[in-house]
Image 1 (cartoon, rainbow, N blue to C red):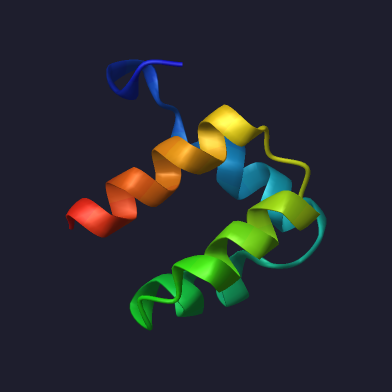
Image 2: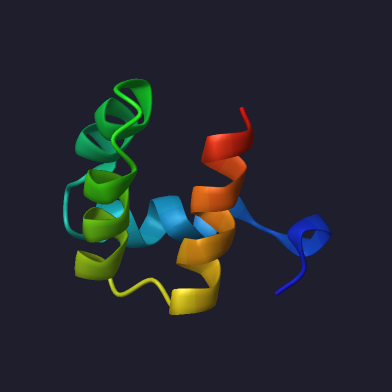
Amino acid sequence: MDEKDFEGTLVLEKLAEISKVDDFFQAIDEDNLGRAKSLMKLANVDHETIQLVLKMISEE
């Protein structure tokens, strides 16, 4: 997946399926990349997308 093709709503939809959207945003607000990664893994987000999301978060 290319960064320009990234569709964040897919990640949010997967997190919503496990009721972890709020936890994910809290982890981002706290710059807790480990927690954000764990939540995405729990939501079955693929590795490539997880890496892209973490990169985008760390660049903010």
